[in-house]
Length: 77
Image (cartoon, rainbow, N blue to C red; front, side, top):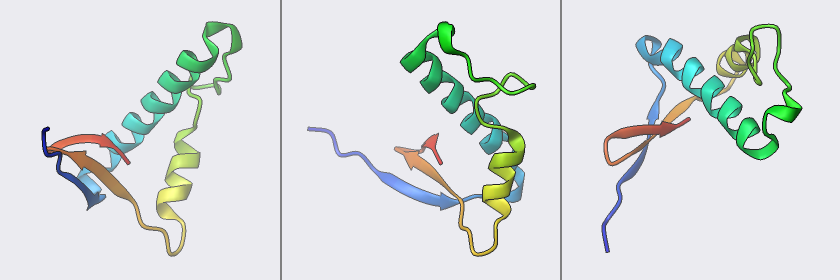
């Protein structure tokens, strides 16, 4: 059995843009996998979750944003 190392890394300013893009991709991928193309719920930018929504969550008072890192690879947030 392989030991897997999972850590939470606080989001840094230099990773913010990629974090937003990664989250938009993950939401879009999940929606298409679940509902297929027949049920697109995309906003005007073609995204399931808007940049504004993600930024609002990151920037909310008292919020903490983390990357999920597994064996040195970003896998979520």
